[in-house]
Image (tube, helix red, strand yellow):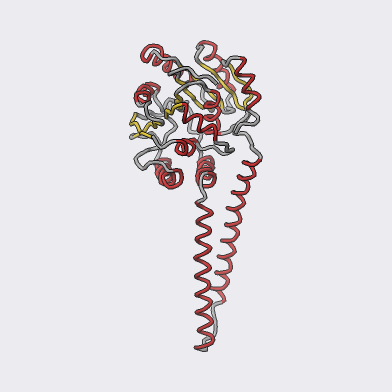
Amino acid sequence: MKHRTNLFSIIIPVYNTVDSLADIANRVEKIFSEILKEPYEIIFVDDASDNPNTWKKLEEISMKNEHVKIIQLMRNFGQHGATLCGIRESKGSFIITMDDDLQHLPENIINLIEKKHHDIVIAQFSNKKHNFLKKFASKIKGWFDHWIIGKPKNIQLSSFRLFNRNVANGILSIRTPYPFIPALMFYVSKDVVGLEVTHDPRKEGKSGYNPARMIRLFSNLIITNSSLLLKAIGYMGIFLSILSFFLGAFFIYKKIFLGIGILGWTSIIVAVFFIGGLLLFTTGIIGEYLIRIIAGIEKKPTYFIRKKKGFDNEKSSHQNKKEIIHT
């Protein structure tokens, strides 16, 4: 695929949003047409929104703006799957991803582009407009991000970021049915910088990251992108084996040399239940790994496209053939 020099692709996953979409498109158009004077494309990816007005609004925007391309997925694949879809469909030399709720100010795109000589530029929010629980969960997840996917300690993750085509191609070359964009980025390149920007309150709707979705995302991080749990289970098994050996030797010593009977029915039952619970937990973790291994072997696609508009016919036909096999 040929890419135009300095063409910027702005990828925006959309879920149930309506009112802010035209505002985003208009502000992005003003930035690139009047200020930067650079070629660009906006790719809205509708992640199977429940709200029918979302797709209608996207169709309306694409008809008014030739730079806008729209994609509708067949079911909800999550923000990371929708973003990966936009990356694969993009043609730009530089990719910019952002949210659909105007918490990421389009005007800050200019600041991201100023650092485009780096492989990856990630927006940092010093005044996040989130509740305490979400901020706390983000801080815990940030610690795991550092240890599991190699996130630099001074970098704060966000979905508002810029990376070049080389990074995009690297991301697309990694096939996984459970994509986590930061993990894929850091695997491709370590040339990462942070850029502090403002974080506005949400203009519309509520966050799609409910507790269940956040747990699912965290499981993708800790299971799909690392062997941390398997290692932890292995170390715990070694520790318990050594502990049980010494306890067994201690009770044998008491019985043979000191003549003290072995009492403690309650402690034995507790130990049995503890070991049994640990074994079941271990089996569940291993089962989850096996499920994901099987999904990878089956090469399940990360997403399926229902329809798209604004793309040229030749590319659209070519992509439709490849969508079934790409992950």
